[in-house]
Image 1 (cartoon, rainbow, N blue to C red):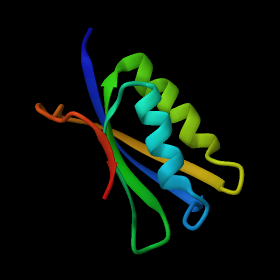
Image 2 (image 1 turned 60 degrees about the vertical axis):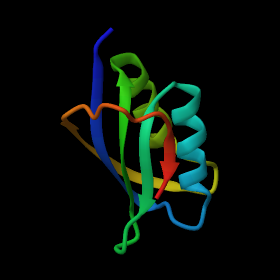
Image 3 (image 1 turned 180 degrees about the vertical axis):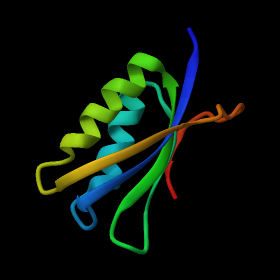
Length: 91
């Protein structure tokens, strides 16, 4: 099973609504590694790595976000796989 890694940026009302903890829970449930963080411009960004199906499911979940969030769009870009990563964290 091939691994895939993406960088993502989530636009909308995504800070102060538990978006990062929501993202960690979804990533862990899909066996993804990577991280998520708030950006200084009010967005949430990060990287996620795992199976192609896991990444697709993850993107679908963060497109919806937690109930209090209002996601306008999710940008994603495929990037190189990182070896040795074992968890998904908030940075």
